Amino acid sequence: MLKLNHLIQDFLISTRKQIIEEGDTIELVPIRGRKKTFKLNRSNYEIRLIPTIFEISRDENIICIPSCNREKQTIYLTLNEENPFNAYYIKSDSDNFFIYNGRITNFSFLRNGDDVNLGFNLLKFKKKITSSKEKENFILDSEINSDLSILIQGETGTGKTTLAKEIHDKSNRYGNFVHLNLSAFSKGLIESELFGHAKGAFTGALSEKRGAILEAHNGTLFLDEIDSIEKDLQTKLLTFLDNNIFRQVGGGERKADVRIIYSSGQDLKELVREGRMRADFYYRIVSGHCVTLPSLRDNREYCQEKIEQILDEYNCSIARDLLAWYLDCPWYGNLRQLKFHLKKKIVKSKSVFLRFDDSDLSLKTDFSCAQKIFENKNIIKLADVKKEYIKQVLHINNGNYKLTSMQIGVSENTVRRCV
Image (cartoon, rainbow, N blue to C red; front, top):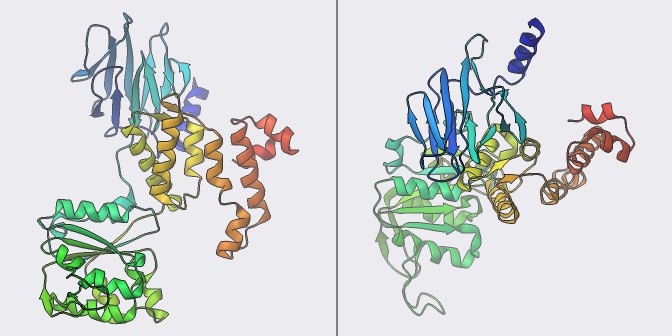
């Protein structure tokens, strides 16, 4: 008994950031009816599988879920208050079993992302969202509803456009949301796209063009990739930012009430140092609220949260080894790449339980260590290349250490040390 307690203690210490504890949530995806999410705020729960009901119901600590046949079963969710981390565990009677992360059992401690299948119903256990990155990116309602400009920074695919649109939708701006990607137009066209032009202002100007600023009057203008704007246009835009007055190409002065959101994938300070951005223009942009969206590879917790959100939309779950693989992927396309990859995988999958396959292998082989050396001019240690290769072969072999060691000609202990 003493040895068992030590094993439990070791388990909790090694997973203390992932254990399910009071305040976390359980999401129930039933065989029929709507899914529901409950906050775990009691020390004991009974989860009953009942054939005579058609919807999930809860009465204090008793949760009832429908059965698609005549099967009845009860499992117990209990908070173990005797250990220092207050972890929940789940168990059933000795004669009954449930499926926990794909294996049959009647007892297990619970961790973030665990799945339990009970009579074709899915139970998902999740940590409450406490991401430090999301706290840093939080924008107050008072800032959303103000005229304060906002700068959103982040790598490609991190969701800058999505966030800008959400800010506009939540604000009290009743005008249009206008998205203008400054890098999508040539130098000669961007001034006309931004400020508009008068009829006959230049060859081909057969009619007046209002421009993005007027289109966004009383609304929001999202200037995407502000780091690509030329210095002469920075001066003209700076004048508008100071007094809301601008001059159309070949036309007179106009005035517009516009809230501006900028985005950048580059370090704007570096552009100032390189002489590609005016210092006064830079300080005008950063004078409002600044938000930095994290990349997936730099924040595993944030990456896992986004994976779980996408899977929840499709009522899918994921194998633990595949989740670990995703958390170790570089995701150079960030959220955009992650969403498209998971959507494609879900569409092609014949099950709601996602497992590792060849399409996942390409996530790392597309950007090999050798490619990163030439692209980033960073020298990678040979040991890191070897470790990456062993991990990929291990995933191809579905975690079979012995087979992997035989295929690549190293000891089994060497393979284990690489994961």
